[in-house]
Structures are given as structure tokens and as C-alpha cells.
Amino acid sequence: MEYGNRVLIQESLVQVGKTITLKGWVATKRDHGKLTFIDLRDRSGIVQCMGYQKMGELTTESVIEVTGIVKQRPANMVNTQIETGTVEVDVQEYRILNTAKELPIQVEGDGYEINEESRLKYRYLDLRRSRLNSMLKLRSKFIRAFREALYTEDFVEVETPMLTKSTKEGARDFLIPSRFYPGKFYALPQSPQQYKQLLMTAGVERYFQMARCIRDEDLRADRGFEFTQLDLEMSFVEQHDVMALVEQVVKSAVTAVGGKIKQDPFPVFEYADVMKKFGADKFDVRTEEEKKAGVLAFAWVVKFPFFKKVDKKDAAEVRDSKSGWTFTHNPFSAPIPEHEEWHVKGEHTGEIITAQYDLVCNGYEAGGGSIRAHKPEVLRATFRTMGYSDAEIEASVGHMLEAFEVGTPPHGGIALGIDRLVMLLAGENNLKETIAFPMTSTGRTAVMDAPTEVSKEQMKELGMEVKENK
Ligand code: ASP
Image (tube, rainbow, N blue to C red; front, side):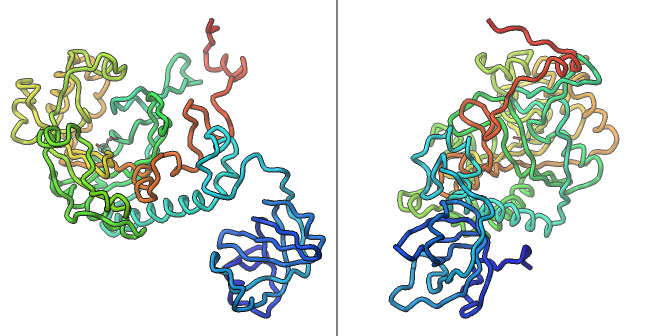
């Protein structure tokens, strides 16, 4: 059902001989003396419109309404570049709905040559280009396919809070000052890790969420502070169960958007072996031809060490550990069952293997998850190994320990990086190309240029003051 008294451009193909009204953007304009030709674009496509001289006043990217007769184009003049190339609209009347002045960036072409600052400042124009427009559609279709695959498997989509407490994903937290409790702060979630585990305690059994995660990490050219994860958790499962389910939904979502997968089932590697073989736990097993053909090569990596020595240059690791040991992936993971005794007794710390599994794709980490500690003594042992006193354990994960004492089923899950998967599917090599409004490389928001200063009154309400940085 179309609204707004218009016909979609794509439908003009089957309206030959009829008078129709189209609404859209002037993609291009060509003046030919008495006649003016424009290509009109809407969300469904592009069609050529031909009109009298006055249409020469139209500027590119203006929004117009056109009423005209759809005509078949002569066979030798069919435009094979566009879907509606067999027809054109003979304009009887048009109306300008919004005039575009001279554009700060061009909308035609793929836009790679335009600098990032301009592309993000005028992102609403940048997104009009067909490369990015198709990207948004691909992303939406991919997420939909994931959702459908998960609904079929009885998963429930649940939202978890954005204003929360530090989540210990190994990154720096984004902090939000509280107006009601001056001097106290919320943290934005680095992931919904703890809430999804609490949903297992709550009896949900199969949870998922398209979750926004926020981490105050050092900026890199292709990364901002926010990203989207497909976050899921399941109860009464072992490692191989979660891996099988994830593999099934990934295959179903990837193939739904036309992606090609190299190996099915996904090969499984052990961490120690991949470190020997590839020198890293992310690797690319595609051949040159497969790279050219846009194939996705998924692989699992398992048997990671649970703990590592703190990297003194990593602020979050230094903050999270008090003993010099910290977790390699996730403090809420369980050790593999064979190593549970060592773990609880605090022995053989460097040798303990965690029930963690990472999903690698084309040289990137596409996701990671684990079977979790669901018994209080196992989670407590993790924090004890990291040097926490009983009081410190209570203060940081006391709420989880409490939940683990009222009937928490064994559980495990994973989070998959949606931005990264879309990037690989689209054959792009920058995550920002997959996000509608990404941040600049210098940490400023697209279009709105935050962070910005706030008023003295706002600061006062928060009980805060900015010290001059001289
Ligand atoms: N919460 C973890 C992360 O964000 C993923 C998981 O273990 O489910 O990396």
C-alpha cells in the first residue's frame, strides 16, 4: 500500500499509457534546448522524465512532484542501466516540494574519494548514494533474517538497560553523571552480559537482542565508541550446543542476503594450534579467488586460556585486575569442566582453559561467547584469581553471586558483531560504511558534532564543575 497520492517509480513500468504522479529527488538533469530531461529517483528506483523548457529551473537533488503520461521508449532507445529503462514519463505538470541549493558533497558515485569529515557532516546526503542506500537495506534484511531464524528456534527478544553499572568487558566505561545522586555515575553497557545471564536466572531460557554496546576504547580509523551485537544466551546447554545453534542461524542469515560460505560445517581450531599456524587468533583461510568472489570463510576457535598477565599499557586491564592476572575474554565465563577444580582452588592459573569459543571470519573476529560460571564459587574464584578481596568481589559482582543462589540454570551464549558481518557481506573494508551515522575518527558524532559544552546550570544540577584544561 502506497501513501501520499503517488505511484512508486518501479511501478511506472506497468503503467504505460496512464497518467501517474511520482514524487522523488532530481538525480540528474539534462537541458536539450526546448526539452529538459531529468532522472527522478525514489526509494524504488529511477525513471527518466521528459518535460518542457521550464523544467530547466530544477536543481539536482531537489524534491519534486511530477504528473505525466508513461510512454514506452523506442526499442533502440531502451536504457539498460536502469530497471525502468523501457519507459519514460512525459511530464504534464510538476511542483517543487523542496529546492536543493548547491550541494556540499556529491551524491552520485561511490563517494570513496570524498573526505570523511564532509561525508559525515552531510551524512544525510552521503546516505542518498546508492552504495550506502543498498548497504542500509542489506543490513536491515540481514538483521531480519537473524531475527526470523531465532524466532523459529523459540528465542525471545528482550531489551536490557542502557543506564547501568560497569560491565567488565575489558574496555573503559562511558560514564553518565546522576542528577539524583550527585557524585555518582551510571555506566553505559559495554554489552548486556550480566543482564542476559540474569534473564537465564529469570527462566527465559532463550534470549536474544540486537544490542548497542558502548566502549570508551582508543579510536581507530574504522571504529567509533558504539557498535551493534547480536547478543544471545541459552540455558541447559553445553559448548557444542551453542556453537551448533549459532552456526545454524549465521548460515541462514548469511544465505538469506546472498552471502557465500566457504566451508560448511565451520572448521574448528584450537587456540594453541592457530597461534602456531597463523600467529594470531584471527585468520583468513580464503584463497585469492575466494577473496575476489566475496566468499565468507567462517571458523571457530576454542580452548583459550582463561587468564593472562595484565598488559600494563591497557588501562581497563590495569583497573580490572589487582593481582597481575586478568581474564583473556570474559570474567563471567566458566573454565572447561576438567579444569573447574583447579579454578576453584586457585591452582595452575596460567593453564586453565575457558569454555570460550570465538567465531572468526575472513581474518576478523566476528563473534565470541562462552559457557558461563553459574555457580557462585566458580565466579568468585575468577575474581579471587584477579586479586579481589571478598569485599571487592561483593561490590563488583555481589548481585550476580546472589542470583546464582536462587536457581540459575547452566547457560552459555555469544555475541556476534553485526557491523563487521555486514561489512564483510558488502565487501567493504571500513565498519563505518555499514552504520547510518557513524562517529568520525576523532570521536565526534556525524552531523551533530557532539561532544558539546553544556551550560553552567546543567553542570550545577549534576553537582559537577569543569576544571579549565590549561
Ligand atoms: N559479552 C561478550 C562480549 O560482548 C560476548 C559474550 O560472551 O556473549 O564480547
